[in-house]
Amino acid sequence: DAGVTQSPTHLIKTRGQQVTLRCSPKSGHDTVSWYQQALGQGPQFIFQYYEEEERQRGNFPDRFSGHQFPNYSSELNVNALLLGDSALYLCASSPATGGTEAFFGQGTRLTVV
Amino acid sequence: GESVGLHLPTLSVQEGDNSIINCAYSNSASDYFIWYKQESGKGPQFIIDIRSNMDKRQGQRVTVLLNKTVKHLSLQIAATQPGDSAVYFCAEISPMRFGAGTRLTVKP
Image (cartoon, rainbow over all chains, first blue to last red; front, top):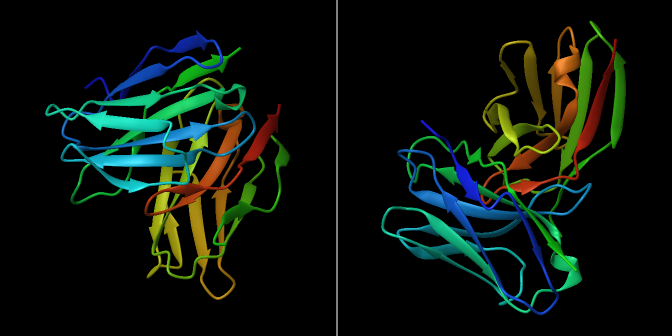
């Protein structure tokens, strides 16, 4: 079992550009959540996807959007990048029913210059 | 607003000592909490969880205590080892909300 996998591991973008991050959930998990973790801070919830729809959303602007595919994998898109978007972006997967423990990927380190 | 936070940003202990990491929460409706460990360059790793109908839960070398009266969680690590050095987060569900974390450093 590969667990939660994220790609790419590192990314450098220019302010104003758009970025897409990808996540494959752990086998058997159908719910995917995305988090932004600034340096020295705890992860902040962006949104959660289940059955290809956004189920919950944190306090992030509309520049942050996502998608979930039929195979449960997910993408996080950020438009009009700002310097402040530089962070580690974490994906976590969990089963929709039963256990609530979330498994995290290694994250994508995004740097906006 | 509601928040999950930690008392201390850093904790340094000697190898072999016991470690206690504290966490305060303000949402009295929270019914499930998780402690995560995050090593440098890695995603958070599940350590132990506890539901609000419990006061204590033990794992391998770790114990979580929940005091609902004062809305306080603690993580106790017995016989702390160098491999325990990491940032520890408490999180409440759902969705998961994390505090800023406590950096645990184990001195040999």
